[in-house]
Image (cartoon, rainbow, N blue to C red; front, side):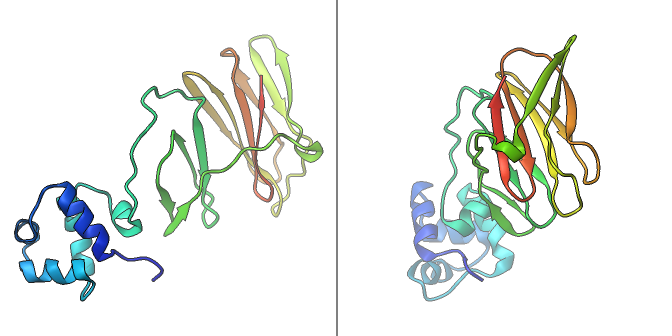
Length: 194
């Protein structure tokens, strides 16, 4: 296992909660000597204690295992400060407003960094009455395809799932200025403003 809870993390979180080793031990039903061993690196908590330890220290299991606390810095909740995460194993798409610690299929996912469209991923947007018709001249094979389109404004997200061997196109109701995204399973995330 690449990462497991370190004693330094347990001690730091315990002290932030203003708990003694004995108080933390009582919350977990273990001895204070066990907590002392964890914090000095002479032992590790049993895997069955990871979830209760996270609850006692008021952190998620992912934060506890990674040793990093995640604090939501995005107080405004503006949709234009978006992050997409795509699992390389199952293809799940996770969307967040602001930074987050996201995992899927046992993998911690990095946020995708959108790029300007290149020639193969040029996003074409045509206004038709009250909709945007969006398309990309991209092959849609089982090996190489666009997975989704997204249209984001300051207060809304609309996503359209695309499928291999389908068409790389979608329609979105016009909601004002925003950002269009498309995700290629081999080349990543692309964006353009509308």
